[in-house]
Image (cartoon, rainbow, N blue to C red; front, side):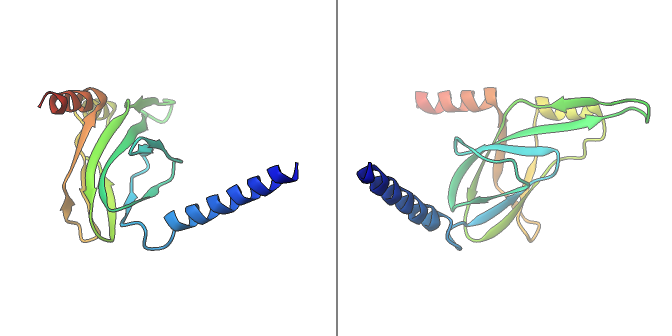
Length: 151
């Protein structure tokens, strides 16, 4: 029984050290901020908590996001939720940056549904300069992946 406790405590200590190394200040190159109607579901295939901003290490990333917003025609209307399926944002992070995802203005349910069918968004840095990024639906991502496999 005591051997188990020693092993468990060593494992816990090792896990804390490893976590500390990955979470050390300066280990992330960028902070990715998003508007209220976007949620990050995963980064590089790893599920994440739903916060307004996320840290990204330097390098290339695939960020799974979901659009959701509610639209009401008038004050008596309880509104209709518009939600996308998974959307995939690919971008390369270099250097210490604060990045912001920006959506086009979506004032109506029709505009939101058009965005979901053909998603377009922009990633900008703290200076307002566009950062190269591409957003795709799940179908677009799979088509791109298959095209790369065939090369």
